[in-house]
Image 1 (tube, helix red, strand yellow):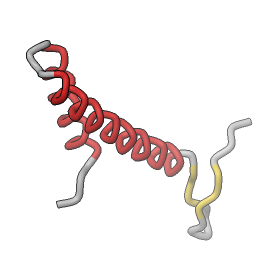
Image 2 (cartoon, helix red, strand yellow):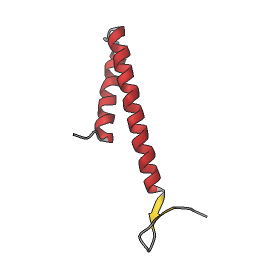
Image 3 (tube, helix red, strand yellow):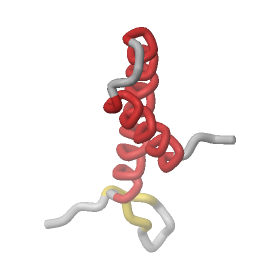
Image 4 (cartoon, helix red, strand yellow):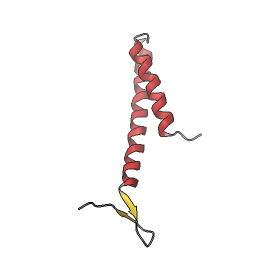
Length: 70
């Protein structure tokens, strides 16, 4: 199954809760932190991609062009 933004965000929230609990050994915390940073990058990439798509509009001849406000 392909990872979605929502799934990644949910995983990230769970890791944050675990780390904030203070009941995680240092070695486990380092692994969890590394996982969290990968999820942050994934979410950031997804958001950047969505922003890029939203900043484009479909023209009358069905071409995508940058949306510019003036």
